[in-house]
Length: 178
Image (cartoon, rainbow, N blue to C red):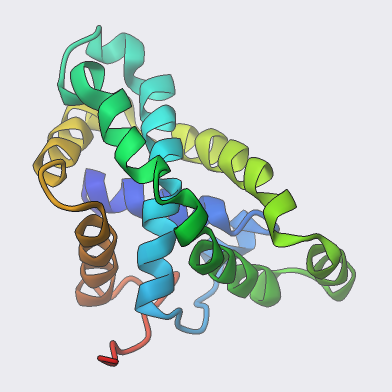
């Protein structure tokens, strides 16, 4: 798996929250490509934070994210409220597949907005653990290549790459134009 794909897959795995280890071990039902796109857009600021946590010393202030990471993240943060519902549906689909009934009931009783801080924190922690230090420069380069794209295209492209690469966790439902 490439550095960027592993970075994205790590983000989605972190979204599983309620059973990341078992989420890695089993194939889930498909997720709507629009929801996956929203999940990528929603989590991007946390992904950048995870990158900076893991790679900050290795990169020594060099690279795109060191120079423009805050501006790059801000573009995604501005869409957080709009993309949260889709990201939440992705989280919920992982939780429904992985959680025991008691945990799922607890999850369903929480208001979706109360989950946001929890999600952001878990994404940073889990993804930072998944990044291999030797991939830091590659990930930085990949993010720089994405940076000129409109935010919505970054999410859509990530969803498309997951679908084309045959990523099974989560697998992406066939795209249906609306």
